[in-house]
Amino acid sequence: MEASVSYSQNMDDEYAKFIRRMNPPRVVIDNESCKNATVIQVDSANKHGILLEVVQVLTDLNLMISKAYICSDGGWFMDVFNVTDFVGNKITDEGILDYIQKSLGPDSCFASSMRRSVGVTSGMDHTAIELIGSDRPGLLSEVSAVLTHLKCNVVNAEVWTHNTRAAAVMQVTDEETGGAITDPERLSMVKRLLCNVLKGSNKSREAKTIVSHGVTHTERRLHQIMFADRDYEGMGESALEEKERPNVNVTNWHDKDYSVVTIRCKDRSKLLFDIVCTLTDMQYVVFHGNVDAEGPEAYQEYCIRHVDGSPVKSDAERQRVIQCLEAAIERRVSEGLKLELCTTDRVGLLSDVTRIFRENSLTVSRAEVTTRAGKAVNTFYVRDSSGYPVDPKIIDSIRQTIGQTILRVKGCPEESNQVPQESPTRFLFSGLFKSRSFCNFGLVRSYS
Image (spheres, one colour):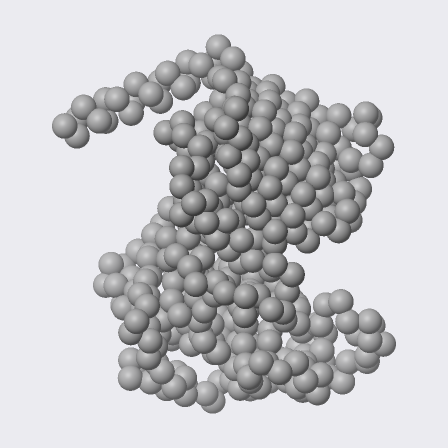
């Protein structure tokens, strides 16, 4: 039976390659026809997930998609995107334009070698750790402390929290070798200790830790992890009272046998990716679509069917689609004060910084951790763990401890007028944290 399935899959793959050779994708990049955006047109043989592949390439380059027209009825996929860079300019960088052309065009199989040159990283030189568990104040600090104790350096990470749940995808390296961690016993210990931290005192919801060496798309995995964890369930009005709720509607277009999904919400970076990712992972196919995000509000409309060819069949299914899309939109909404840390990377840096946040009653609602050429560039969205507005005096105190030139409050107009009170190297070389042992980290004390 297994051999039969494998043979069938191989035949499908070969057929897909044949179709691709006979009908190679065509990518047209136009910087002339639109006054304020670069127009990218993609024509290709159709397959499930192709829309996500295209959107993912553009999103990974941090491009803003202001308009999109989608058509994949029949065996052909045709899509047009209006894109700009993050500050609203057309795309003129030849390296980025060439990467788009090769990633989406007939030479897509040769594009991987260009990824680092345009800032899209991948590789097998790290170990990937995926986490899911109940959110609580100090969780990221405790997870980081465990990894530091086990001599794991966090080189990249993304952390999301939504509807009482926390998920993370972390890329770690061995402190001594700088490469992936391969010792099975050590990996088993990493999984066990992290899972214990994630469980905490909550036995009603599952906690899970997965360790792998494969290349993964971090943001898509976060959507998949939280979707599998059913974080979309039980989202009441009270959970959304401090932000605008997205308006998601699903109706059936009986004449065309489609279900029509309409979405109105505040526009933000990567919104289209989040929605298309969720529809794809829920096994829906987008046959037609229209996206307009030229103002502060984004409007998106999709004609969809399930992969089995049917539209939405019941009110229960309709409600589930609405809930899942609302959750996809809200997971990346950044609640809290934005702090950006930039300094020389070292083992334990994330643990030290998040411990300071925890000791000052701040909780991290979202985090992005990156390492570039030996520099740590980390972004944190923090809130007061008691639910009150963040006290500016606490932020000033934290910045004096870490270094005002190292930790900055983003979007704060007073920041440019502040004069640093100390050397920017204070946080790195003062030995402030060397006297603190692993046993100081409450929940993980029993592991040492």
